[in-house]
Length: 433
Image 1 (cartoon, rainbow, N blue to C red):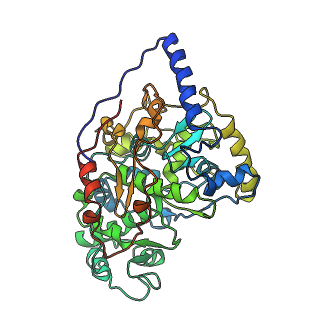
Image 2: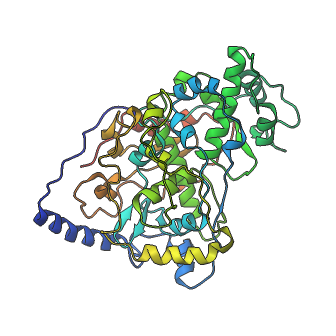
Image 3: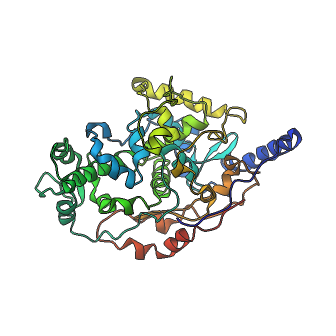
């Protein structure tokens, strides 16, 4: 996702105009939320909300996540993590998940629009959210590389570890066991060479992205395809991490919104931070004091917004079903006065989050190896401080069965498969507003 777009449009402070826009926004919301509309919500029959509306019991989703803190941090990795563009994610680290909150949000997600349908209208996780909350680059190439490699050779070359029967998950040639990473890369030797430190840094980054950004449903392994991204750390830093994380999360939200699904992956971290920033629901009791953060890097001095929520939190796992019902009621009670449409206004952001604000409103597709998801920021104009027009029934086809049927796998030349969408992403598409 490259190029530059227009900056944010300024809004007037006129009370009269705000009132006029509020009325129009309520009309726009009424066209997209409330009772299911057959012309728009074509997938309602299999949606989790359909079963909830019928009074059926649905257990909270099971969150697939790994605790990155179990692989110790070494200051010698810092240079390479910064170069790779992932130091902001490292700064935040693992944040305990409120399963009931995430499950309640998934019930409001609609694949037909790639947005949550709330009483106040549509809202979604945008490129702005991914960049500002996690400190990720927007302007860059998608993560879309060929996967037709000998993965044992990739592991031995980039991690310096001889592959044995404990390296990959049983019956897999690409899924690296997390237990293997924790066993062999728990502590980098004090007198390690530069090449060895790089190998340990790659193992750390692999667990970082596999735990906090691209969590799959395996529960105990991470795909070796992400190792390819860290062959060259500086090259890794030129990827559009924000768009790739969003593509993966959109796909997981679409899958989890189906009534027969029990698990949820992707960046649960991003979704939860997004909710805490924008909605008055399930907030933890405390945030970090960011007045004097330690360190000498830009992301040390000015960490991403999500860092403020990275205190240790505990949630009521033993009463998730009851808490989920409570969250449903709180979502039902949302109004314009409770929602924060622009929570980042006035906040000091690290440089990586200020590079390409115009791209937050691009209409280019989001791509992640085998995943292509459509991005429709025009449906949530209020999140960009813009006047919300009543959106057309479809901006981009977000149901696209052919794309959703593509499965992850090795041995594919994904740049050729997604050539059309890559061209759109690299031209940055159009910018609405």
